[in-house]
Image 1 (cartoon, rainbow, N blue to C red):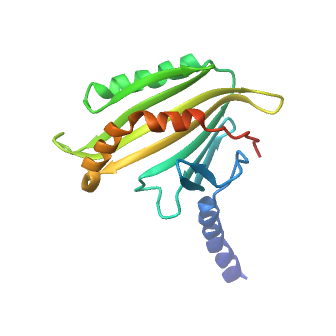
Image 2 (image 1 turned 90 degrees about the vertical axis):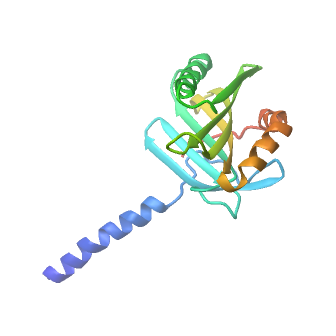
Length: 194
């Protein structure tokens, strides 16, 4: 009998680990997401508290740890003003810029929505090399309907790594406004929290 209980106790953590790897569509977003001639599938999700939901989408050949482009959808329940949220993120970027000259951003406003286009990087310890460069375009929208009230973030993240850093920055320079337009014109999904 003790042996059966021990086996049961050893199996519970295995189920728990497997359950943590399960990806949940908390926001009930129909997929895949088609954006900029790429198809993105739900790859990771998190619901760390009752008010916050995050979902990350990747192309089939990409992975969370090293991707070239990713789509993110986040929702935070509550009463917010977009200006306060933008100001908070800008404060974070300005603080990062003090120690990282690569950090750069611009804010655009359109019909009550905001787009924050920003560049961040992870640099070598001596600061002489860029190991990862990441461009993010965050589109913020207030949601206020009978089912949900809060802020929706729809975002695209693009990364360059050491081996393709020149290509990353050349593409950024040549096509900087194109992705902003694509994100700004994308029909945002109607989220429904499960």
